[in-house]
Image (tube, rainbow, N blue to C red; front, side, top):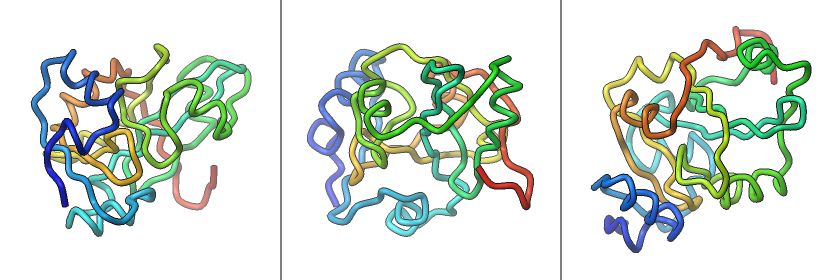
Length: 166
């Protein structure tokens, strides 16, 4: 495991950290941490302490949703929070074009384009949360309020209730 932010993070994300003046430990793992469960296992934390950075399209416009790793996004709640007509999951091409990163490595900030961001309120249930640092092999931790602020996110209840899938 590597812990130097400059070499462990994606260069675009390392630049974003520097621009924000954030000095965080970025951990790089030899195996992918592409899923929330893989990341939690590698870090040694609960799955709910992992932040998933998910791109959706609201009326065709990309939007980032930050969700804890143990929960799923309710697209209807996202639609309501945004006042959109339709919300769909973005494909891999849109994710990369919007963020500059591949699915599984998208960080909560430091993207190629400025995107509207929603953060699920459930992230605030933790003292510290872990998110991708631009690659499927790297993660970093921040207190959730700080992560949400750096992402420029609006807090919303967009977590799926049990039994619904999206």
